Image 1 (tube, rainbow, N blue to C red):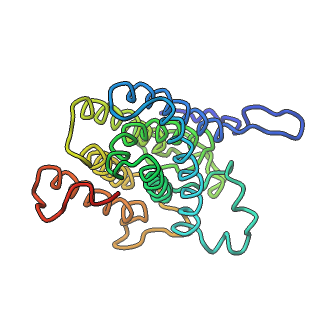
Image 2 (image 1 turned 30 degrees about the vertical axis):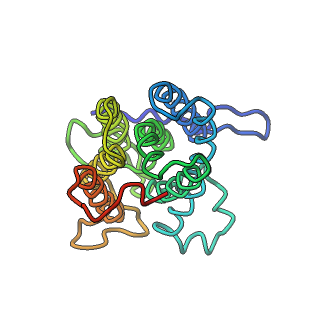
Length: 270
């Protein structure tokens, strides 16, 4: 059994200015994405370092705006209607990956038009970078002490204080499990798969399948958001519901790349 270390969410205080670990994890994600993106750009036409820097600006806007709006709309709309100022308190958490993905997709579409590429060309370049942000983001969730799993007597559980029960309990550290699967494992899969030239959209397809499958699986151990609970059958969560279309779209992209959808024309999405 592990003991949760009770990490202070504030990394540094400079008078009234507080720098939160959660925000630093986002900065680390973008820096890691820039490093790996710059490395990939050396091997892929027409990419270069300047394009990677421009792309990350678009992606950052998509992640922050899409992630926040996605959480508000998908997970806790009533709360933010009652307390609209809470929208800006991003250091407290409340970012939706699926909302961020929608935001990033819009950002990639705009960037693709600017650089005269197809959406899938940009998505295939970006997809191997995303697990870096998923890794640091889940570590940020862990530091914040949020998104815990269910109570368990498993040796994999972590001893943590539950404010609702006002006592210490043992829970699955599902933030760390997601960091491992969605961050480390998915990064390795994509890094290996993307080494060779692939049909347009295929790298993005592998990312969608990998993330969707890992997230769907972890949700069985993760406690659903209190304001939502289970949506159906006492096990289906919002995270699982939003992950299913990702897997289906990812499979569609792989089939398309394998020429199983002859009616679709490559480059149709510009």
